Length: 289
Image: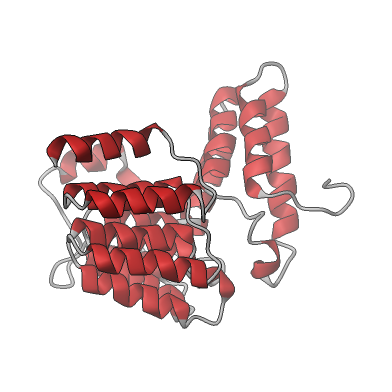
């Protein structure tokens, strides 16, 4: 494919890289060559949207770093690790801060991406500073011994290029809102995604399922069902996970009739086969009714 001028999807070429990295003989070396061959071609494109499905992600970098480790090539490992830090700063940082519950920082990262900014590392550093001073914790002496260069903070690196937030980034932030019980912010994010010019930022089935989960968690089943209807109107197919979340919500509210109607719609209109979770959820509903 590469020799023919085609760039494979990152999931495909990173899987090959991972397999080569774990194999014997020259496998790890070939893994590094493959990684560099793909990324070199990706960097040739000025318009990153043309190659966004081929750009390296966390899995690709982890695979090539594993190859470096198996070869014992410390220099190459550090080079690629630094490259990964720059390239994935925004993506990993945004997801990590949502996971940490720091939604304010996650919001700043997403907004910075929307504005086309490249100084995300500066934003991350600022979030860990207090009153404009460098952050120091109680274990700073131990940290300095383990990573001495990290305590000598210079100018934070900028991203090699600007990246636009996609539906996964928005959805990750939405999940943070959902877990914090901020249903209105979850809905507001959905509405903002609908207005984006870039189709990659439009809501997908994961986005809609997240909103449904937020409404179910809040006990607002009518709104959750309305979101399912909107999915169909916008030609975004639901899957068995989406229906199982709704089924669980109806059963928790002891609305068994609605749960049965939804199951029939799932099988008939949507053409989705219920799984063991679907039936177990319905059985639990009958037990607690």
